[in-house]
Length: 477
Image 1: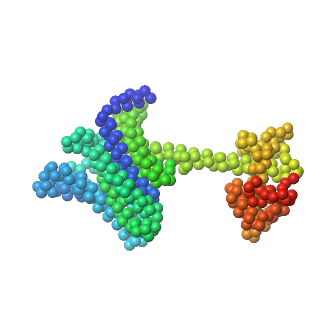
Image 2: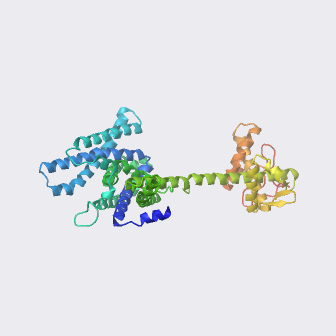
Image 3: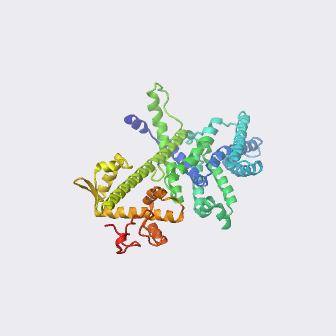
């Protein structure tokens, strides 16, 4: 299979490179406004715009065609200004969509998503109807409109150059979007995260919103002929959503979304070349030799999103599972330390605890073994003749843990009217998350207590913490 894939990729030529470059530029151009849609939690607005721009594009195209057919403009002028008219139509519809959504939400007294659904389905239906009505008199391919035709980008070249028009258009939009983000980054950041603050600072958040919708619509037009009005939503939202799983910083979010869009283009075209022949030949369909690059770019973007969803360093499911498992081990280890300390406190001597005694606790047999291994690895527990005992480092950590537990019990008993038998449960969980600073505050706020509500001695503070003194009653024997 690997050899077969290498043979298929070995046929890569300049035609494939132009396709990948076009898809990468279109994806990167869409990713920039997509970042701000994602952070503003308006991803559905991007989906809506990918549909609502359709009637604007069709109307502009038909208007330009009408002017040419009546002889008011020449064919050369028509070809030169056709894309500009489509940009203008899409931007107008983009702003109109935002205005209509707000109007329907206020006048119809419906939620924002419902208003958005009403507007974008209505406008999208109007666009499809326009295509159907004009299809017989004007060359508009519905499949190309909906799904794009990136494989033919090398046919339409920019006059006087050997560069595909789609590369120039999408590259130009990417440059414009980068310049807008660079110049208006402060305004975009503030209006995205706190529109009320933006307004108090003299930044009109509403006009920033309308501007973002216009830029998004124009960007969608640039990618429209490349991937179509349906698949463009993948380029608009998926790279930003993937990057959002990897970082919370806006600068990193922008950079990673651009990288994800570019990688999706490369991997998508490679999948379009390799996956169909390998998969379908084994199913007996030898005539299937490739797939739509635009569709496979969307698939590649989805696969990268799934990879980030599982393996992201902070929000990935595996990372969360590892973090929770490590937290469980830490809590179990500290519970074991607390058991050692309390047993030694009863006997006024360092406790030697049999392994069977530890395995019978609430920690559980398996988790106690893992906790003992972790504590031994950290040098806080050592093996003894009849079991295990604390090292000096383990004794110090156990004292801090029990000190946190008993200070919290004292704090709860002082501020809440709870019976004494209700104090232990909350302290049992909170003790694992009390840091030295909070211990200091509790100790000072409680007027330096030496015993908890149950009469148990609160262990002395570690060196450098408040409460360290030579009073015998504050130190265990």
